[in-house]
Length: 222
Image 1 (cartoon, rainbow, N blue to C red):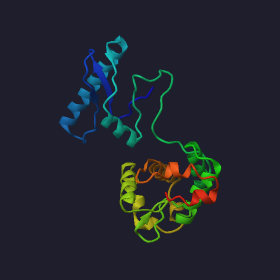
Image 2 (image 1 turned 135 degrees about the vertical axis):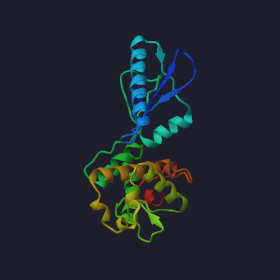
Image 3 (image 1 turned 90 degrees about the vertical axis):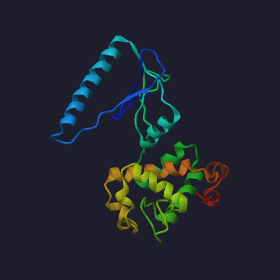
Image 4 (image 1 turned 120 degrees about the vertical axis):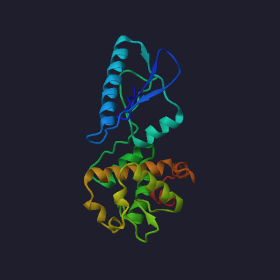
């Protein structure tokens, strides 16, 4: 089961097919209109709770475009076709005590074997020294030194994650990422690794899975 996050609850009231999203935003202090909205928000929440308690509300899954936005933001959402026993998020969970260990565990979790992951991380070592904000020339950026449209796509995801400040050139130097708080480092790494796996400009994922040694895997361009 997936649960909507703070941006709204999607409900289908009375058995119809419409999808309703309720989300209240905090108004500025002293705003009469904001106070009215707040009261409406309380009323809507009370009605939804009563409807849920009475069993007269059924939830429906929104369209693909809405789900895509939820997935990209890492929001929780409710899937009426899912299990009642678990809630999950689309956000990748990294495990490990260092960037190298977290990246290793991530790629193992994606189905790569040890030799293939060694080749992937060998590329990261050569490209950036495992720095998530490294840019040696200003034209390429990140742990795998993406450039051109690939860099633009990654930077858009970094901005969407609320980490735009780390795109600044003050974080480009070798070792500069070490000054970034651990939580933000993890999020930058997660965004970067997910970006690598989502790229479709060339089929590196399947190409590297045919490699049988770290050296062979390292020859594959990410």
